[in-house]
Length: 570
Image (cartoon, rainbow, N blue to C red):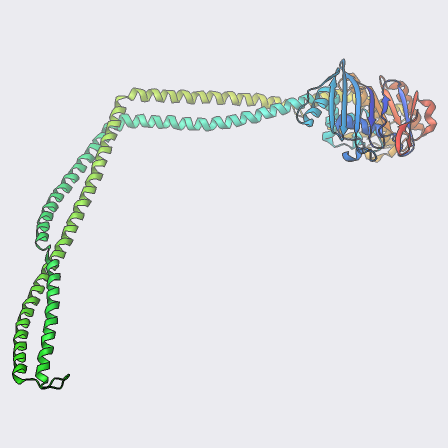
């Protein structure tokens, strides 16, 4: 059971720097009154904020800080659970979230969300939805059980019956199933790879033993063929080298042809120049008897001597020029022969080089074949090691098969447990067991409030309502006052179930303005009878505007606004 003792808050909503403290255990029935805006409902927001980090009403978290002081917002609550004393402190500006157990600060996780999870799951064993269904009934910010979605209704019931552990177990099993299925997929890949390796090794051994010698003989035949090609190429090279030697000797003979041709060309140029000069002199003396420059006559004997000498030298030079041209022609033919021989030498050299390249490639191919023959020979000599390797591969494959079988069997068991623990399994069986009691209690409280209907929840938490007037009704068919009676009956029932299970049981019950809106006078009297004589082990706080009910409660807590701040009236 959770025994809430007291709550204190300051700089929270309209409350200023002067703390407000409310004791939960001093009185059984408490009336909380005050005008609108006086701060009487602040209790609900402070309680939900300190325990669940969110207010009861729809208020943004930054708006919880007192708008005047703008800092130092803090709420602190004291309670007992299982013989341990707890204090939870939560604040804004600065941010605070402390959990104190028996005077010692609880170790803080790095993330406040983790600490919140510890508070809800390990200490309170209540979440916000369940807390507001068992502890609080309000007119604002409250969603009655009958207006919750089916999944949220299930959460409340599971918290009450302490069977949410099955959901947690189911989530763990679901994760285990996922991991095991991933493991199965991984093992399937390994199995296929190992199977391929076994088959490859089997084929290798089969090929090694059945066709090893055949392969060796085939490779030896290829080597013999290659050797023949090498011999043929080497023979061709010998012939080419012989031809090359002959051609190179001829090249030597004609090697100076080009040089001589250049020399003869120079001589030809010189002779041509001399011929031109003599021709010009001959022409001068032939055509002139008087010097064109000095206008003096040229002696005839001198002129004739010069003409005769020029004719003789010209004849001599022309004969030499003719012989020179014949020599040049001869050297040009020698040069042509030299060029042709050079081309033939180049071609022969290229052919020899190509053959040598082919010979090197064939020799390398021959060496590779010999290496392959040696490898196969070694493998044939070491067949036992290959068989041992095959056996190791087979054992590895069998081990994977065994692991797969174990994983699949584990998944089958986990799937069975998963089906058992999901909503339609053992949880539904437990809920079925308690549904008659729940429906009985709801109808009991409805009758105590003089509301004579037959209310029934099914396994999916859908209601069936029968009345003396109507055979079938739904929650939405009733008036607001009748809905409030159903909400109260459910609230009281949940507390009965919680007290019976001692899981989500608590001493605190707070109702906000239940008298002010939906309950008429008759229903109010019935309600007061219930909280006074029927509800057991509870400290009840009723928030209301109705001041005429002071005498009906053991204690009255009044709130007022003073200088802009909310405070309790002393």
